[in-house]
Length: 423
Length: 105
Image 1 (cartoon, rainbow over the protein chains, first blue to last red):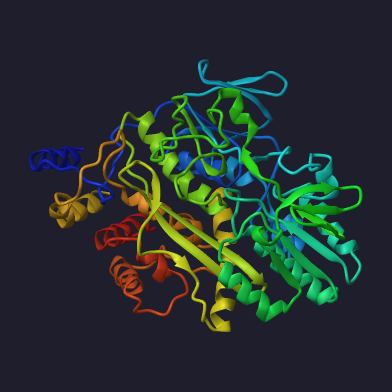
Image 2 (cartoon, one colour; image 1 turned 180 degrees about the vertical axis):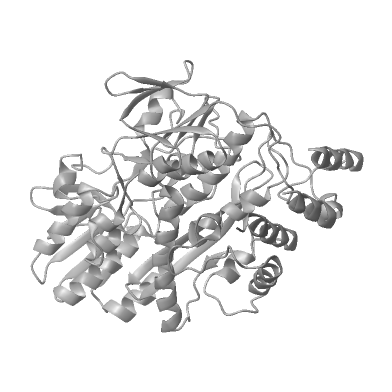
């Protein structure tokens, strides 16, 4: 603390403060108070674990008794991995002292500083961290509601939806057509629909080579587009066809009974329809008005504290986190910054300025990996932005050995981040 | 931890003075822990990797500075670390290396 004060005094004398430089932030007081975390996904599990490592008392509330990851669920759809391999229990978190409570949160009360579970139990908090993920806009595509999703699965939350889509792919005859309909921006996991097309194509090429994958896109460009399209041409020929928005890709209506997709231009009867609808923050945030009437929750992007209600932090897909994509890696990186900020605030200290990383690996095939990465900091307007001159995608001219290495690293990333989340 | 404080204060005190003003309830500086924890997304908690990505917890402070500096300058054949290392100042690279050295068992 002496050192910190000294430096601040120097800065005052110099008439300047600093941005995004390195300085030790040493907790000078022990954090006191209890933290409740909602959601045991990439954001919530990581936040709970890192708060516990900082000595903070943490209760993690999760509606399921395990968590299945959206990342790597495409390998399940491609027949490469089992569903159980993407499902993680909470024994490690419990062993590290996280109080894991199974329950579905029905409401958040910012005035009482408590949450209510289905059944009526309440849990009080000093600070609340919410990482509840996405919900779907069921009204956005005509005919696509929760019942339709049982027939035309979104599989954009890993679980029974993943298994429905996998069973449909297994049951499809050779020569069938699989449609994938990605939404407009922003949405969870920007490269995800295109990795999905890749790994479904890998399965079809091996098992049902006369089949096709049609991507009906609500956009005219997508993440890692050049790398994906080069990989598709090299590995799958014309098995995958991408229809952009401007060429009639936008899905306006569906008929689940006949598996028909109606685009702005024409209609397509397909064998398997994977409709990924437009998204918003999890509706739980509405119980406290945390999205302020919008789709996503505005926050102080340095601490993830809601700008609507004090003592509630929102991170991951539900939050407005500047230019960071809505990804599992983003949520994990944000959770560590948020955990450090919450520990500092509980101890009466100023949180340190953030530094984030996002890296998204995608598998074009089991031995063909590509990546995009960025480093993120807070810029002068208080929002999160990528560091210029850093990050970017894998080189377009990389040899097969590099693609194979990045595929190994994709698997390594999954092993590392899930152990970082769950212990 | 005192090692980090000394190192950073000694090395970067002068550089801090030249940077622009920001107003925030948050401290103006990032911390070695914020910088280093982000590495765990790929390299595992505290740099200990359970899978095929290399662990970084047992790299010496000197070697880590040399490696990250070489990655940043595109002087080493790697898949992604050249892109990532470019996101850090030399001072931050030194702080990250010092942090991992300080938590090494």
